[in-house]
Image (cartoon, helix red, strand yellow):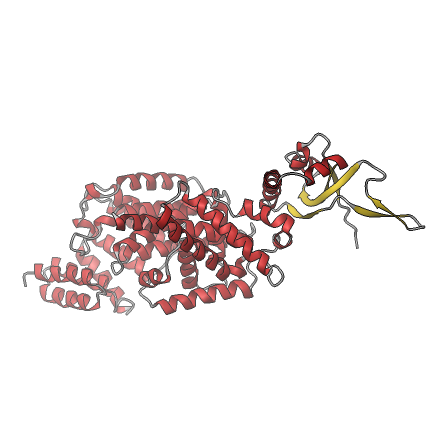
Length: 119
Length: 421
C-alpha cells in the first residue's frame, strides 16, 4: 500500500459561490463529501485530511516578500486535501472518481504519491 | 397484545444490540467496550421512550443506528482530547472534517456480518477464560442481559458481572484489536470460536433448568453465530459446516425432548413425526458440504452420529452398528469419559444389555460418574431389563438423588414406579 495525497482545487469564483451557499445547499454538499470520505474510511483507506480557507498568505523567495494569496499567481485555489491509501495510481484514480469535487466542471483532484524517505 | 409487542421489541432490541455493539466497537476500539455498551443502552432507552409515544418507525434498525451515531459523535467531540479510539480511525475521528463522514459509513445498518465476525473472534481471544468468552458473546453479540446469562449458567449475576468485567479489562490491558486473526493463527483461533458456539448450544440444548424462552434463544443464537462464520471464506471451513450440521440435527429434536409436563422424554419415546424436518434437511445439506474436505474433525463424527439418529425410522431400526463405528473413530479423536459412556449405550443396543452393563461397571469403577444421574438412570434401566429389579431400584434411587431439576427427578421416579417392584 502506498499513500497518496489528493489535492482539491477549483476556481476562485467557484470557491466564492460555495462559501455563499444557503445552509440547506451547504448541508447537502457536506452529505456528498461525508458519503465519499466515509466510504474510504470504512475501507480503512482514508488516513486524514483537512479543508482550507480560500484566503491565505504567500511568502516569496529569499526576500521573503509577503503577498495575499494564493490566487495572485494562478486562478485555481486549493480547497482542501485528504490522504488515502491505495495499491497504485490506478486504484487512487478509481477511488477519486466519485469525489464531489468533480461535480463542478472547474473542480480538479490532483493525485500525488507521497514519497517515502528511507532512513 | 401488549405483551406480544413487548416480546417483539425485546427480540428486535436483542438483535440490534449485537449489531450496534459490533459497529461501534469497530469505531471506538475494544478497550472502550464499556463506553460502547453505554452508548447502545442509551440508544435503546431513547427508542423505548420515543416509540412509546410515536409508535415504532418503519425502519427501526435505521432509526437506532442514526441515534447511536449521533450519540457517538457527541461523545467523540467531548472526549477527543482524552481518548484514543480504534487505532486506524483515531486521527479521522479527532478531526471535525472527517469524523462525521467516518461514523456515517461505519456505524450504519446493513452489512454488519464482518463486524460481528470480528467481535466473535475478539470475544474468543485465547487470553480469555472459556467461561468469560461465552459470557462476552452472550452479552455483546446476542444482547442477553446479565440476569439472563446468569440464569442460563446457573450462577449469580455477580459472577457474570465479574466475568464480563475481567473480559473488558483484558481487552484494555492486552490491547486486543478489533481484527480477524492473521492467516497463520486462524485455524487455532477458529477452533476456540467453534468450541464457544458449541458450548452455548449445549447450554441451551441440555438446559432444563432455565425458562423455555432463554433456552430456545441460546439454541437459535448458536445457530445464527455458526451461520455468521459462513460469510467469510476463511472461517467457512468444513469444521464450521460440520458443527452447523450437528447443531441442526440436535435442534430438530429440541422440542420433543420434553413432554407437556416438563419431563424429559427419552429418545425412544419421542414422536419422530414431530421432529423439525426442515432442520434435519438443513443439517443434511451442511453435512454434505462438510464432507467435501479432507480433514475429519470431531464435529464431523458427532454430526454423522446425530444424522444416523435423525434418519432412523424408529428407535429399534436405528443403525446402531454404524453409530458404534462412528463412536470408535470419535473416541480416537476425543477420548472423553462422557463419550465413552455414550458409546456404551450404543454398544448395549448392538451387543445386548449384559455386555453393556459390564462396560458400565468398568466405567463406574473409574469414579468419574459418581455424580452423574444419567449414568445411574441408564444403569438402573439395564439392570431392570436384565431382571435384577432390586439393584435396578437402588441405582435409580441414586440417580433421582443426583438429578438437578424437577423434570429429571420426575423422569426417574416414573421409571422406579414402572419397575413394579
